[in-house]
Amino acid sequence: MKKAPITVLIIRLQACFRDLNISIEDTELERMAIIIHDTMLGQMRKFHTLDHVFEIAAPFNEPLQVLACLFHDMVYYQIDNGLGHHTQRILSQYIEITDNQPVINPTIGILPDWWDILLDIFNFKTGDLPHIYGGLNEFLSATVAMHSLESYLSITQLVKIASCIEGTIPFRGIDKAGNSNFEILAARLLAIKNKYQLQLSEEEIDEILYASVAISNRDVSNFSDTNTGTFLDNTWLLIYESNFIFNNMENFAYSITGYRIGLMKTELFLKNLQTADIFHQYKNTPKQIDYARLTHQAQRNMAVAREYMVAKLCSATILESFAVATGGDVPMAMLVGMQIDDDHQVERAEDYLNPLTDAEKKPFNPKVLHLLASGRTQDSEFDMKQSPITAYVYQYVGTTGIVEMSSHAKDLFEKKITHEDFLRTCPPELLNNMARACAKLAITRTKALEKYFL
Image (cartoon, rainbow, N blue to C red; front, side, top):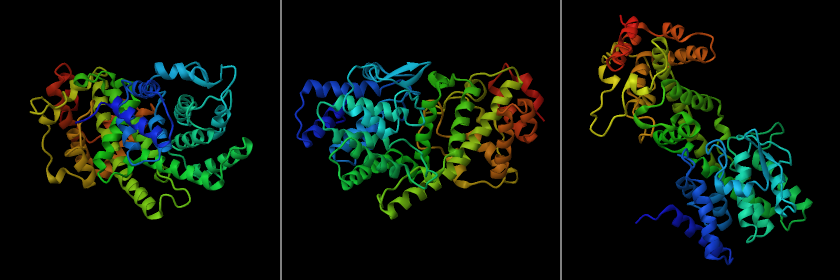
């Protein structure tokens, strides 16, 4: 029988302290679990949830690694729209918020022994304004962990936890000197050992880095999923987290432009992400054969995901352009219909699309089409797992055509052309089929859409 997440948290924390031979009162254990539990129940959290934390911690038995996993996603400033009640109470002692930007500026009189060490681990200093993609969330999460655990763990144990959390700052490449972020962290820890006279051998520093790289790779393991559909499921959860436009999920109530913006941001992220920056290795950990497997699968997933996202973005841009050109942005459901229920008793625009003949189809990637037509592994709260309209567009223009269409879409996003200009770059027969299908649902736009009929 499945246990409640708060119970799972307490059990994992109990095991950690027991394995460390540390006595802790049940009331303190409960308080610690509640802080983690309540903080991670934010409305917008769909990927960075307690289930994600439990999944990351699952393969680890070493208690300090597990503690690092449990605390590593405590703060997600941009997703939670600031700090939660518990984290605000703790972090207000170490940071201040200026213009909605956390600034490192301790307000407590006597700082704890670990504070300066934590700053050095993250290479921050008082007065810094860490960026959300430059370690802010990880630094604040580590601060909560150090504050919560300082009464029970030694400085060296706290250093290991903070270093493991620092290692989860994602997607960092090799620096100009040819060093990885884990080699840089190793150099920082050696300097910290000497500066603060910590009892840490070079072998123990290596052990900290091995633990850190293992958690880091586990944290992004979905990139190496052998099922690209599952990888895309997680991508869709991240789209939801990153876009407050999707707060109103019921019946596709968000606007078409809002949906397109969410896709555009994710497509740009995937386009710019270097696959070599996803997984990491430190002194042959993980072993080369395992590291090669991770990176190879990530490359395969990314190649399919990029083309999939470009296709989704292009079809959304056509729909947005229809809406803007015929009177303005509208709820997604108005042009394409509601999300399909289990019995498919819902009117959808794709029901009115003329089937494509083989002669009308252009060369495409069958893996991409399979994901569009058959779907990802599960529906999301704001999008069906199948993408029948995008599959239609993708087959009609093919791989080459979708790239060309995305180039025109980019011009539109950069305001170099108008929505009407964008539509003029699309195949007229495709627009005819789509406009006629959308007109069946958007009855107040039927007459305006007729200008795209042939």
